[in-house]
Image: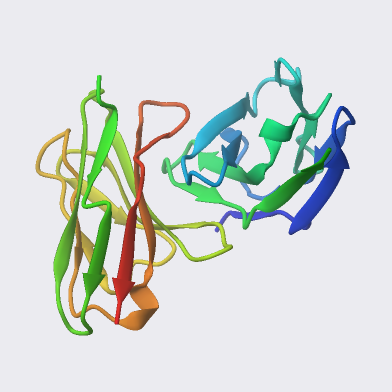
Length: 114
Length: 110
């Protein structure tokens, strides 16, 4: 069975600085999708960025980018120029292309220091 | 366009009671999912469905049942509620890519 591991329960970063959140996963599949979701205190789940495993190029969305290392099964999220509104729980997620199951890591709580 | 709608938003149940959490989506998505999120934790997959008439167990299916009679609806049934089922429940849907989430149902079992 696939697993998703986020080893950093909490992180803090100074406003305007850069922070990287870690995610590793375990799978025997070659085709899959990876996602980062943000959950602010409102409890709403917001998609931050997605990556298809067959794409070698790392995905970017404005200040958010990923470092996807398929062989290492690593999928880290980099947030540049951190803003107060980035404070939230961040979840890494894996979608199997075989059975369409989507599983999540335990999350990293990100604090932004003014 | 409402997206994914969950009802109710809040519910308090007594131990042993049953209830159904409703989820409906208007995006014609084939895939639908139920997750639970315990305080300070990640989302655990309860059940999911890849289309009408098809359901599969997720990571934590015990104590729950689902059905998928239409593309739009994916209700989650709790039988004999237990305190361990106190959680926030999220329904989500997707086509082939990212999930669209409902706003969640906060359930307390006392």
